[in-house]
Image (cartoon, rainbow, N blue to C red; front, side):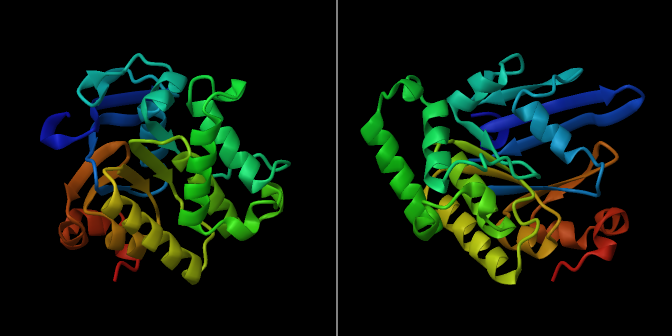
Length: 251
């Protein structure tokens, strides 16, 4: 584990795109059995941090550690196979494959020899568990490209879970969901961390969702960390209110 018991930890991360300082000395840590929120205005650097954590963007400075090991130079596929999974702002499903086929493909891609047919029983068992957990049974034979946004986001969450992650990075999973779908997502996330040691890092603009499910929150603005703390501390922080929460309903 890293500092303060973090399973996945980024320290002093700096990223620049041309003349834009996307991240400037940012620290983020994710602990097992907890949901940590990463919030801030559009362009604050949240998705860039996800890309650094998953190896898609190399930082100019800083390092990323996983379970105490420096993984800053690891390729994305190596990080995925060690237990780091993510979802995306835009749905990245295989639209011409069924829901079940999407889940099977996710398991196979994350496990050595999966694409060669190894571990079929483990694959089948895990896919069935995820289908039950997310209530996807009635959708298993539907093409993913035919699903509305709410169901599609559940399938993408299911794909991430089928990789058997130790850390789950969720990039705006509540985007496009109605009230009932958001409530269902909250219950699923709360159940996941209550029943396992899964560590979750959540980027989300739905502040009631964030305040409900997160135990800790880090706030970014213009690539810098401006606050971190519990939901109660973040809600009461005048700097955060001025930068972000002043226009949001966080009740």
